[in-house]
Image 1 (cartoon, helix red, strand yellow):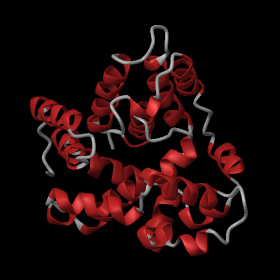
Image 2: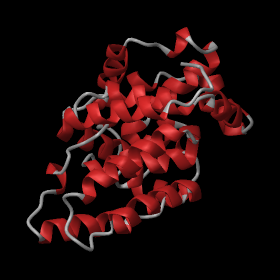
Image 3: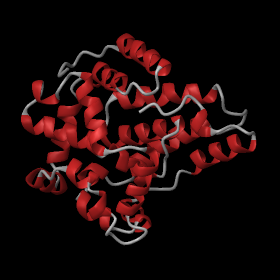
Length: 249
């Protein structure tokens, strides 16, 4: 880690392992490590060059405690980002701490390779991943994860996100009906990520209290039209989108 050397063959080896065991999230971390080079430091510098980034660094709010306090989030208004987030996480059996636990299982810590400020930022990017699903409208099926990662790639850079997104979409295409706009969905996610305001820069506590549709509008997040079209095409053909290659992250 913390190396500028790009190792595509290592990344592909770990992707094959991920396909074999879709629940082994540690393979995702290996892929990102193999392909991202110095991207985290560069992304952190861009983050800190903005007033929003400086404000988030000054706050350094513990997002895990915030996101996993469902009792507090359930007190937010119906239709809020926080209510939708709770619905999503509870329906999937997920927690913000759970992703941290998977990261710890990987056996490497950003703090061991980066300056404290950079490692804090890397952890923040990780901690908002499931919130990205709510904000973008992509679920946890394989194509949904690919789209979230391509959206994330546009917002943060890094070949790892891009690599996983496109190889995952290839897996989906093997099962999707002819004519399903899988490629268009992934490309649309990348475009939407570039057009939207950076989610990681947001005051997450304030964001959770906003009505979801208002928050999407404020951030310029466009609806995932091609992704929805793929789901419709698959369901019409009797294919469960959530049963195809399962979730990859």
